[in-house]
Amino acid sequence: MTSKHGFHAAMTAQPGKGDELVALLERAPSLEHDDCLVFLIGRSASNPDLVFVTEGWSSAEAHGRFFASDVAKAYTAEFGPLVADSAYTDEVPLGGKAVL
Image (cartoon, rainbow, N blue to C red):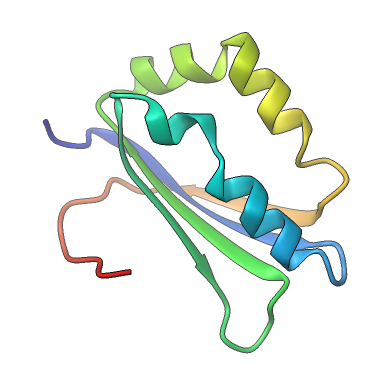
């Protein structure tokens, strides 16, 4: 299966909350979802409160269905107290390598 839909997010945590934001992302319910093909978390080397996420999904419809679910809505509500600012752009992962 290949990614046909995705995004890249840059999230600035509230001051000093970068570790909590990363921990929240590490337990994302989409990690267990078969249609979520890519889920990478990164962090700025110079700013520990700047966190990045790249997601790749089998389709825009699968992504939409998942994020309309009660579990996804409850999860995304947890970001409010942690995130000061965020920016999203569409991105479809095409390939590469990740050794973590």
